[in-house]
Image (cartoon, rainbow, N blue to C red; front, side, top):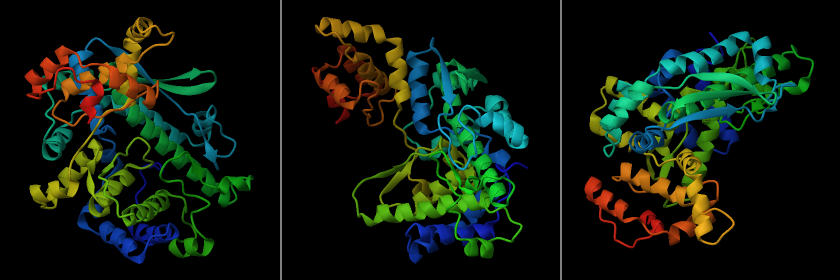
Length: 443
């Protein structure tokens, strides 16, 4: 079994998570909250999930499905390439660079490398974006979204695009090519798989270095790629580590990394709660999760203890937690009260795609305004198309490429087309005042 799927030592996890939580400034009460959660029947069921079950769904978020709903209605002829390039390796990953990382992993850690390639280039393509568990989670936790027939058909037919690794300027790049929905479905799952493998590989090297297997003592520092489980030199003082782990233990193993991530999170949530804020908190996590177990437990902790928590964007978390909760006899109302909601906005992906398709209109708009630069009407159009497809939800403004100030200036000036006013009335029964500006829709 690779480091990605090794069993978690729950007893040691409970012990070590307290160390990291206290190191992060968490109070005794907050530490107790985490321990109570980890020792609950639901968390025990989560920790008992085999890696195969965790990887049986795409690492998708609700915003993906809502964007795909727009694509299935207005971009049926569009294909795309999604590329993932490893841009940075820091910390204790020896002499590896982004260009040599996978080659080093293939040579030095073939089992881990093989698991990563199998996940990215084989397993993902076998998954159905709208698995029955996903549909059940949507039914329970997102009452405002019912996948239309067009979306169901296209996601069932196109699925997940095949991914190939190519060398571009000396660096390995993963590329998923296919229909816009199929290519989009490769993005977050591929990124999460690479993130998890890089962290596991770096931790293994760091632990081996600490044991004297590598000459460079600096390799004992943990690898960090900006993810949640950057455990290593902070893996704790030697005495505490020795007390928590048998001498032969792998002190940067999956259990230790999970304890580090969860412990740090306890301190962060406590700090946010202590602000006594009035903001609504929506958890958006997934693509950068270094362990899917962490993603599920992170969601569960936010559901239980984050102030003003209103929901999660993680379709994966809800789809895996829902049958576990039901299996433990938790009534529907209690499940819904815990999760609060499965919510999503949209992403830069949508505006970037629309802009690439309609860049000529931006150029022409600039010319007609007497400017030597384009005007981002295509980005405003992307938002209008999204609202036309998903008009039952509060619209979200998210600029891209030109920057937020420029987007806002154009949205303040651009009048909503009469056709959009008519569509919103016919599709959703929503009245948009004639003469409204695009920016008015975001209020």
